[in-house]
Amino acid sequence: MATYKILTPAGASFTTAGGGYDYEMEALEGLDAEIIECPATDEGFIAAAPTADAVYAKGMKFTAAMINALTKCRHIALGTVGVDYVDVAAATAKGIPVTNCPDTFIEEVADHAMMLLLATHRRCIEQDRMVREGRWSEGRPQLLTVPRLMGQTLGFIGFGRVARATARRAKAFGLHLKAYDPYVEELTLSALGVEPASLSEVLSTSDFVSMHLPDTPETRGFLKEHHFRQMKKNALFITTGRGPTVNEAALIKALEEKWIAGAGLDVFEIEPTRQDNPLHRMPHIILSPHNASASSRFDPARKRRVGQELALTLQGKWPMSCVNPTVLEKSSLRRWQPYSMERGPNS
Image 1 (spheres, rainbow, N blue to C red):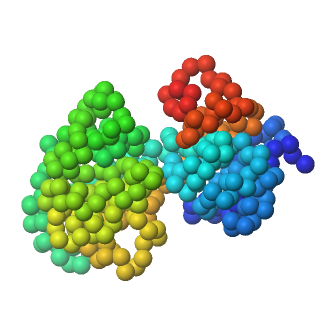
Image 2: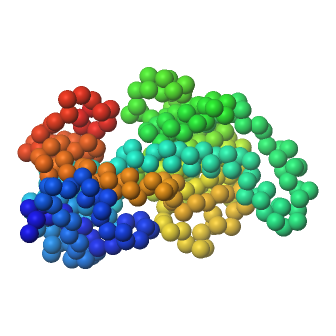
């Protein structure tokens, strides 16, 4: 029997099928640790919870009741950027560190955000349909009404890692950049050539508004009807963050009543989207199925990161990317990094 038991619900996370835990176990090799599956139900997890030295959170929501059933757990590890499917407040109350993968697939999401921006601006899907449907002559007249990209303004709501990577890409296209994020130093923005702005300034002056807020109790339903009313009529709305941060009914109304010109959406309030969602019927909307982070690197990189974080805490060390770092000082884990890694509690 292994010294350390890492409990995880049976089945894969996201839509990637099976594959075992070889990537996660690379960093755990030699630690006498094993990953043990339990039923992917609240009851099944709670029954197995007292045996867990750590939890690999995937495939389901982790409620306060599930977390409170953990009696000796020293770490809850996630293989995602978002942590909205774990009750972090309950974990913090129990003194359990929660880790995520905040920097593993940032470049992919930034690529996707830029793709949605360019594709909506140049009417990519509509132009494709014109060719397929024999409406060739309609293509050029449509684009003759579209301003050129250079010199237009891209405004960010939230300026974390993905927004910063997107800003670097957008700058090469000649876009003027603005950002609203009260938690980021102005010098961080200006170093990337981004103008600090209030939320109302971003909304009212941007030709493109790119949403990057995480899903937290504070940000849920953040963008409402009155925000969309502030935007320019030619504005395009892009989001690769989290669907629940946007009031989708307000977005639909803004598009239907032409307060804004269009949107490129990778995330939605309810996922998967229902087939009767009005967004499906709108011509100048580009939709993708919450797959901005996907690439051939996605699974190996995030699974290895989970294993690395678990290996640190099982050896009694602080993890690299703790989302509730206040628990670390009170824990038996020790700070170990001799210099800043520019992220997390060790920075």
